[in-house]
Image 1 (cartoon, rainbow, N blue to C red):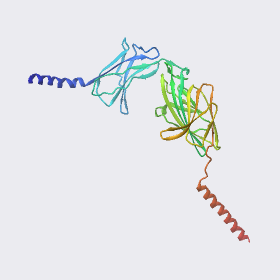
Image 2: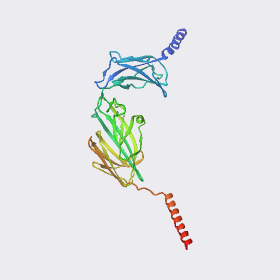
Image 3: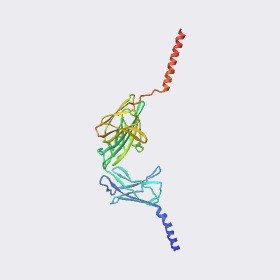
Length: 320
């Protein structure tokens, strides 16, 4: 029995490294615009990301079979590499779920879902908008958070898809005279441009939702500011949060909802619902704080007055 046990253990020790030396990734390509039908004879590329480096190995390319499936075998085991099956469908790149090796298995599944395309925005809605308003002397501080949803079954490619310089997918009107625009959504940093009073978002939008956020400043010399914004996409609900208790918000359809706490901070909440394209969101923001006059300026003015008075007194005395 001891001899038999040793033989079995030897075979296990010999064969285990061979089994563990490679891994396999398989999956299928589905068309989400055609009832998730399988896509045959389409090229799949295995895209690899190692840390901050991209490994684009053209040897890992194959086409799906008659059942829409693909398989990459004999892959080197490396827990520092993320593997992504990648498909180019209608000139748009789609990725499967990332795969990273773990010691529990050497076989992984990652499917790729592709979509037909459309340039019509009829299925684009803003599911929810959060508008945060604050004020400092001489300026209005605005932060916007949008939850945008593509409710259709096609990738929305926007306008001018074949003209990169003019192409955009979503557009967001900005207030007149705005300053210090900052994009707060990290993944959108390279997908936006501003022309005039409009912010253009250029990333293609597959079915599903995404969040987009930015902040800006609107200078004001008065204690009241009028914000007007045309509605380009249907908005299910727009919540307006005001942190300064002295500010008041008025406008068509605006309903005060009372006090609201967010992460320990207290806001006055206002709400407006069911805004449709062609309408306008109109806000009258009142009781902005006035510009403060710093103590340094008061001291400087006082010194200048004393100097003028002293100089005048000395001049008059010398003449007398």
